[in-house]
Image (cartoon, rainbow, N blue to C red; front, side):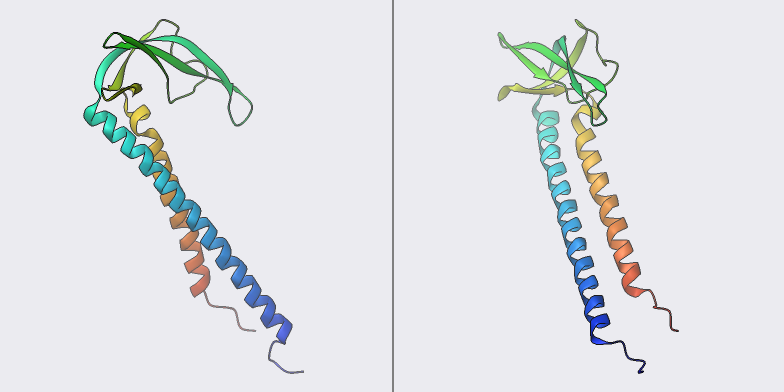
Length: 159
């Protein structure tokens, strides 16, 4: 017997490396996608925060839906009037129990160029999606690529 690995062992190692590289590439594409999705939310929030006007709104409905675990959550539906026209907009944050009571008032930021576009004037509603997507993409990319670099440079045991 020789000490050299046979052809099948080398081919298996090569296929494993290619598979790992493909997985790394796919995960990095997902992280890039999450980053750009966050950038989309960032642009919308930036536009509203710079150009929006504060308008009082009233909760007219708490929309019931299921969360990822099958539990019940509620999203507020706000009604507001801008320049004589009445609009409704769904809040961005679902919660259980409902975050707002029916008839409760809240301040919305309304886009004067498109009054149907509005959001609750709070940090979470404006910037929460961006922060979550960017944090997830950044942490995911650091952990995934850090593990890949670690495995690339670790020494293989001799024996």
